[in-house]
Amino acid sequence: MQRRTVIKNFVIMAGGIALLPSCSGDRKKASILLKNLNTSAEQEALLAEIAETILPGTDAPGAKSMNLHLFTMKMVDDCHTAEEQKLFTKGLNKIDQMAEDKYGASFAKCTPEQRKELLVQVAEDKDVPKEAAAFLRITKQRVIQGFTNSKYVMTDLKQYEMVPGRYNGYFPVEKN
Image (cartoon, rainbow, N blue to C red; front, side):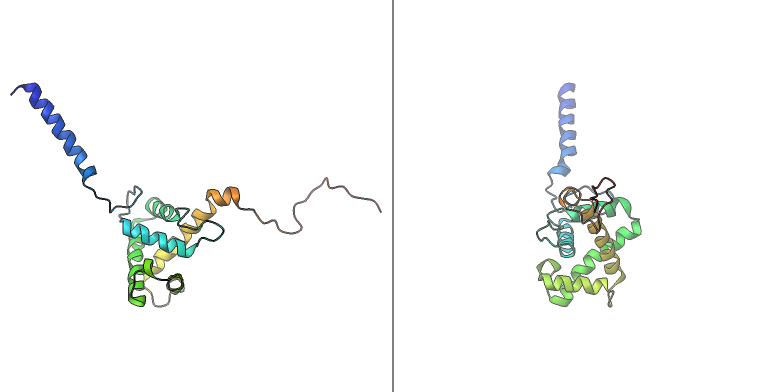
């Protein structure tokens, strides 16, 4: 064997080994790149349903169509402590487990009324684990933050102006 052939085969083999993890078909990860949070695609879908329950779509877009679940995951990954990230992940799983215990179905398969009832129970802290309460507090905070900073709110939403309105020093006044 010639030296060039050995080196060429070695480079091809090294390139194949480098590409092998991307070809493994591991599509179970979340759709966005996260540094600290380890979430699966199922957990991402569950978070999307929870966010949609918090901020449902009406004539305005809902949380799922605005990808607020991805915003929430990224904010928890970047801005929260390691302890809060653990509570977030455990609380996400706990909410699904609570829905399973209470309604006999996963959170995603529950009716909207059942979802709302469960989240209200967790928000009011009625005999719920601390992980679920911490998860819902973080999720509500981040979903609302994502909505108020979204393109829809910043550009399309009309702002309400309180009565009497703005002061206009140049308003024409008629004499009696």
